[in-house]
Length: 261
Ligand SMILES: C[S@@+](CC[C@H](N)C(=O)[O-])C[C@H]1O[C@@H](n2cnc3c(N)ncnc32)[C@H](O)[C@@H]1O
Image (cartoon, rainbow, N blue to C red; front, side, top):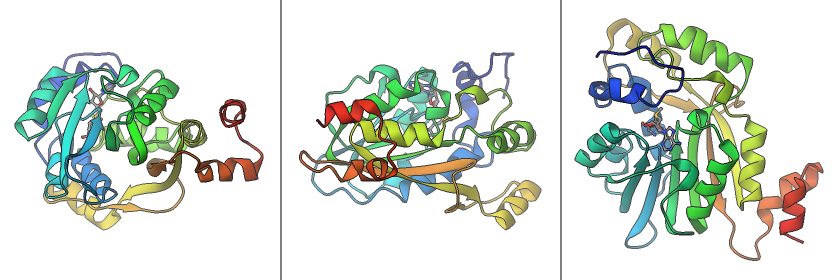
């Protein structure tokens, strides 16, 4: 692995890491653990030809975990070297930017946004795009890093010094994702997102750090203070249940009130 000096969050870093994507115990090991946890949120397809759009698919690590679930797995990413690998693992790939997804409205049964939202500069725009391409009744699954001091400490200060942790400089912590913004923006675009914390199983992590062998299970639950997972269904027309939590809390964003009259 040769890595050049790059700015934090420079997507060129994934070119430098090309040989690491498919090494389960390499520099991107944790992405393998996260992909497995994310895939657990995806049920088998409910119809033939169901489409799953994998936003920021990288090297396609989700692919083996979707095998047998019946989706056409379509990946979109900025980085060509990663897309080449994803394609070799059965993903139908499109080079594109999550800010302007090259897909029609409502074309996806499932949208997956794994470990990508914390890399985008215009978070609100990307959430809007992710929700736009999801069909009514479709499922959004995601995981990302919280915009908290604890996440900054664990994912950057500590994590970047650990093998298997985020490669140094891969994150710009200023782009970490505030849970409230994510949930509110999804609600604004018709997806009632439920979130929960996500962490590596401690004993397995210690064993992995000592041996660099085997997988580490990601455990879901608890507060979304560092890594967290989200899952939400896009509302069908006339179904306003996605608005209830914000209405009840009196914190519904102004534009939702306008959109829903
Ligand atoms: C941490 S990797 C995660 C890859 C994959 N989702 C996974 O979990 O294995 C982040 C990926 O998001 C991609 N990415 C970052 N910003 C993007 C954007 N604006 N549009 C599309 N892809 C983007 C990067 O190129 C990279 O492949």
